[in-house]
Image 1 (cartoon, rainbow, N blue to C red):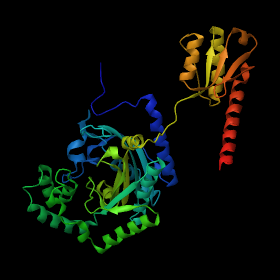
Image 2: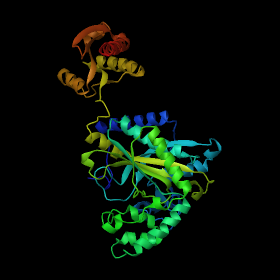
Image 3: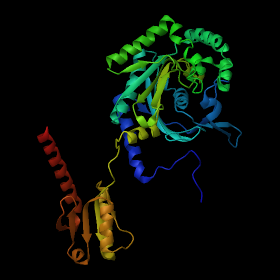
Image 4: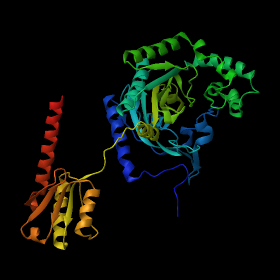
Length: 435
């Protein structure tokens, strides 16, 4: 038997509706915030992600799937969505069309990491990128979009943690201080952090191995080395979040895992006990140099991404069902070949009108077909035999009321549609009465 590769998974039919509901919710929220969808290739030229020899992020140094194609070009399966989106933004000159381009994407990403619950080697990511503005208000808007999505999914106790990495001048001053501090603790640093000390000392602050050690907690904080401009940018982000009534917590140790961030960085958490300490389900930050690094003009940007599996898992743990059970409007039961052909014809009429329909294709008996109607959660069951066919009639049962009627064979579609509309109208009337 051939099995799926380690770190991948199958989305089975009963799970797909949760995915489509999540996707439709994402699209709705993005439309509300005026973000447009973009779709980029699943693989890119490797330099899209491997741009800098000093980039010490785990994603770049350890986790990407890299290979050469038949023309000896180095290709990488995309490990995240921002770089490909920015590459498409530059290559298609979207900056010439709109002064601010607000984009979102959804799709599979690939990282060679240790598989665990909610984290796989092929995973789906949703993200937004706002390109063209260096205003603190756009930083706050991106954070607000993430918080709004979480609430729209029914998740509560959303917490925003954020920090600032400052501008280039702030980071250069801070890096010097960090290097001097951590040089006095080289015997306590893990091997990865010893390598980061030479290449990118800021990444040491993102270490999961050393973070609980006392010397680590006492490391200098970047807010002591910010320029006035960096302080003003961050304070305006905080003011904007307050104005939108979004609760936040400033976390001086937050640096995020990708090296292209500057100024605002943030994480969105939900209070779900099953997640334990790993309760971050979305994160992002500002990246004012990335467009230029990828060969474009000097255009600022800010973005955010969510692991979609993590969102679904959070909904599952919180008891939030994203999808209603499958059903069909009409299930056709036909007894005999002539009846089967007639049912097939009328079923197609109903399907063209937008009704969900099915029928038996296994030649089973009456009892088995009724059971199939129940299994498919049919709203109506149509029963057609030789006697009904001779008179161009059909028996139709409303499974919500158990009332059965005989109607014209050619009136199934308007009959069902009328019943559905009347039921919907009644439900709305009852809703108003309750209110």
